[in-house]
Structure formats: structure tokens, C-alpha cells
Length: 71
Image (cartoon, rainbow, N blue to C red; front, side, top):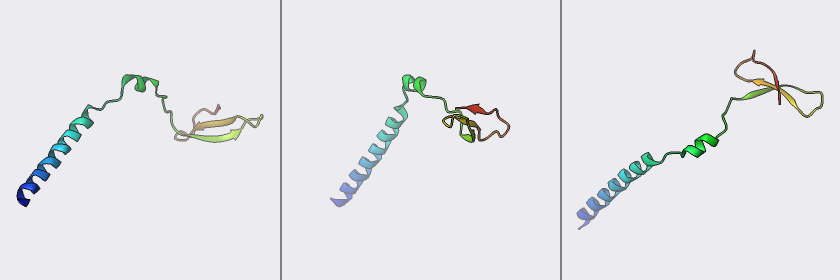
């Protein structure tokens, strides 16, 4: 009796794993969420502060010679 229970338990686990794999494959992001996502341009470094003490001067962290912008 215990042998048949163990076989049934392993078969049940295998079946659940296969169904989980199939379910995970079918999950896709909808097109709307992909279109509404903001594009990530990278990390920035604060170079200085503007005269009004509100805005900052920033540039890309990966490119030291990049153009300094106000944000």
C-alpha cells in the first residue's frame, strides 16, 4: 500500500511541475504595458547645482565626456 502511495505522489508532483512549466511559458506581457513603459536611459551623476538651488546639472555616469544637462 505504501509503495503505491509513493508512486502516486511522485506522479502527482511530476504532473504539477509540467503544468507549471507550460503555464509559465504562456505568460507574456501585454502589448499595452510594453508600450506604456518609460525608456530607461541610464544612471546619472550630479555635476553641480544651478543658480536657483532647485535644479541640478547632470550627466551620464557611464560617459564622462557626455553633455551636461539641467534637470
